[in-house]
Amino acid sequence: MKLNLTEDRSLKEAVIDITYNMFDRRIQKIVDTINMGNVKLEGVLKDKQYYLVSHDVCYFESVDGRSFIYTESDVYESKEKLYELEEKLKGTSFVKINKQTLLNMDYLASVAPMENYRLEASLKNEEKLIISRHYMREVKRYLNI
Image 1 (cartoon, helix red, strand yellow):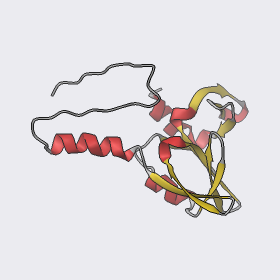
Image 2 (cartoon, rainbow, N blue to C red):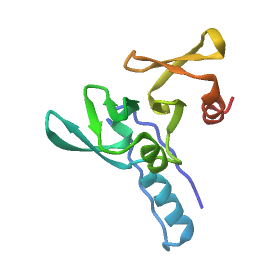
Image 3 (cartoon, rainbow, N blue to C red):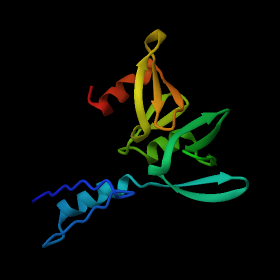
Image 4 (cartoon, helix red, strand yellow):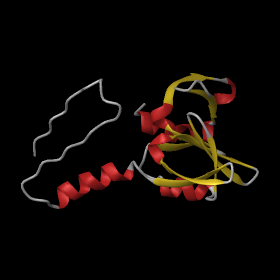
């Protein structure tokens, strides 16, 4: 198998082309891995139902038993519980950073140490979230540190 990677900064989103002589299990595994990152989600905003793709979500937060979906521009309410979303997004770029929050690590800009062995996560949209020490191991594993 040969792999070609090309950077094109003029693209708005990544394009993946797969060329094969025979569709086999290896190709299917690659396709499944790529599709896993695009989980479909339902959210409600102003009494309207919206269908979102997981890569557009910055993070999920649970407040008073209700789950919310945060994108760069809007906040949607989800009918799913945080633990259901966590299970649905297993194997993607989402990592639980505290009891109430699942963060899309693709939106993480930086981390800074805080008191009590916690970290402050700065997102690309300039929001800040707290990474509790209990969930720090998963964050470090994702970042390979």
